[in-house]
Length: 466
Image 1 (cartoon, rainbow, N blue to C red):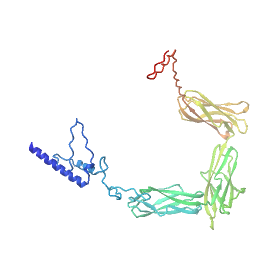
Image 2: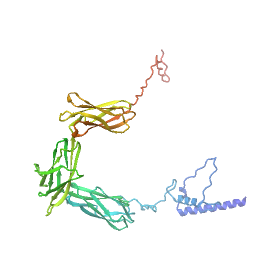
Image 3: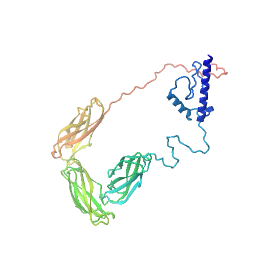
Image 4: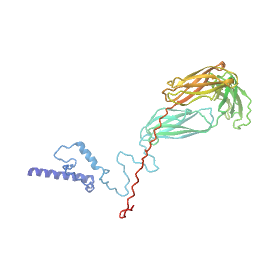
């Protein structure tokens, strides 16, 4: 027993000496250690951990030794005191971290940094006849490789090209930009460069210019309005140019859909002095245009001289013409509305079809077509002549069945006006399920309710006598 006690005392003294040496080397104050806690009486006290590297008479887990060493040296744990700093000493960030910059200072350049020699390129006054080019030069001013992942112009009028996407520190590059001028007045066209630049991962450079169109079209679109089938209608366009002697070379229609056009005298009373050249062009909606929407797209080819030029420049300008061609027959209202439809419930909705010209006509058949969704079945249409040749009544009837939701379709009418073709009357509706009304809760009446008890008398006060 004495031998064992002697060996234990020797080992204990050796552990204390080693722990004291380690604490002195690390500069920690033992007084800053958190107070020890007393375990519950029912639990045997846990043995105190030995200092790293001390022989405790049992094997030591190397990973545990490393963990203990790391935790012992940390000062941000509860109960650990931060070592005192000399007054006025500058802040030193922990190893492997990047300190936040002082206010107003740029972020540290620890990665690729894209720096452009010019971030806004102003072409000044430009015409819309010639593409403009800009070589946007940049340099990797960072300390690591710059990787460009995307160059994205802000609109389809600008095209970009780049020889490569990786640039070493100090290496220079160029983004070639081609811009087709469009618009009027001051315009700005952005280009976004996406890279691993940690300061500006989406760098934006801009093309600027003051647009001075060589030619203007008035109006920008031709609107013919509603035209009854079998009639023609002119639509007039005024072409203006800064060159008072410009000429209209030709008009080219798209999709093989043409319409008659010709130059006519300009009857405009207001003249823009900036555009002294003026010519009027008349487009004609043809008589044989079919019932429905009418649309034509045309390119007007113009020859005009730029300011100070001796030879004219050819340019193209697009114009679109719209009209609505209607037949002699019209529906009032223009479409059938099915209001208040319910599942498993029959419905009827009507419109009246009349002649714009007042001519008598006959509806030979009425057919429901293009029903959506197709699950809404059983819809039928019938036509009935109104007295005194006042038109025809069209009745749409049906039952949505179990369907709940919106539905639509059309009624096609075959008439005696063969030249117009069938008349189409659209319809739409909503089948809605009626929710049951919850019963209102009522409180049953109580016969001869008992009187309310008298309020209790305050303490020390005698109750009133009846």
